[in-house]
Amino acid sequence: MRPSVRAAVPLAAAGAALVTFASPAMANAGQDRIEVEGPSYVYDQAYKDVKTKITVVRDKDTTSVLLRATGFPADAAGKKFGVHVHVNPCGPKGEDAGPHYMNPDGPHDLPMEHMEIWLDVTVAKDGTAHSGDVVPWRVAEKAAGSVIVHALPTDPATGGAGARNICTTVPF
Image 1 (cartoon, rainbow, N blue to C red):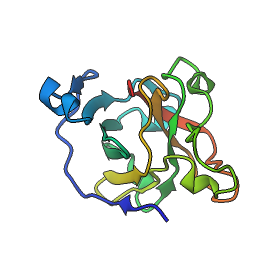
Image 2: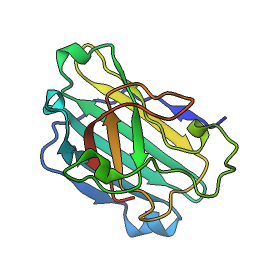
Image 3: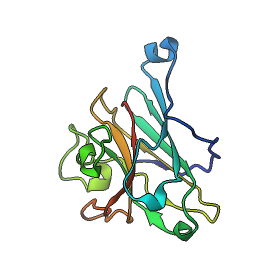
Image 4: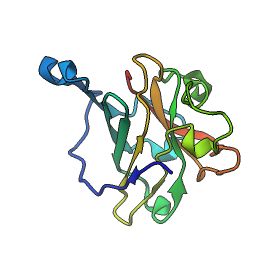
């Protein structure tokens, strides 16, 4: 079973998309860090005020992804939403992000939750949501392109999580 992280970190007010990368010294150590603020696209206008911050740290043999979000509508409090890494950048239509990213080197007899990066969140009363996942493989550069917040919790048997609410492009 892979380790999972659940972090409660407040999100600073998010404006236009922001992307930062690690210093060359960190990259030389076999680690890189990406931070992106979004979303890039909103597909369900009920979530137009949600702001996301995605942090990705790729090390030699692991990838960590942290999601921090604010601005969920009041009726989302207590609800669980599926959140996944997808293969393509966001686009005007939800399907533009393509399917979930899957570890191409993993044994395909593993349950889907061990082959993909899932960041499902439960929204707090104040409209915030935080989650993270650490997987025991390194997502290759440009192999994934976005993080999507879906309408439903992830079904562990199928990986499905309903409609796509918002999408943040992340240049993995």
